[in-house]
Amino acid sequence: MSSKKIEAKDYFLPCPFCGESALEIIESEFEDNQEGEGLTVYCVCGVQGPAAKTEEEATFLWNSRVKN
Image (tube, rainbow, N blue to C red; front, top):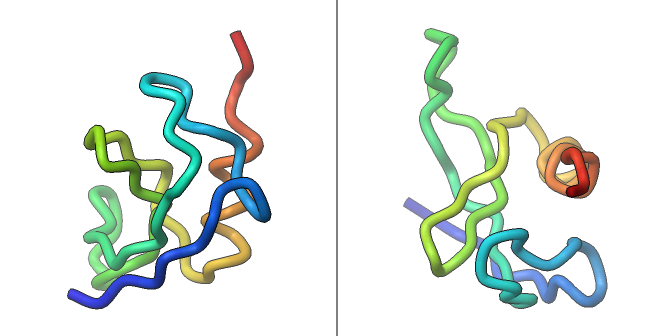
């Protein structure tokens, strides 16, 4: 599994659970799709965003989550 480290302060909202700001985009299995692997934003605390086909889409989905 490959990963690309991206600084959250430049691209992502902080993790809503632990507040971490250094997140990664990693390859992840789509749970509801048989097309294979996708990309997701991942935090060291174990939280993952929704799976997406591109880094841009994964980032958008992470930053578009419902805010409390």
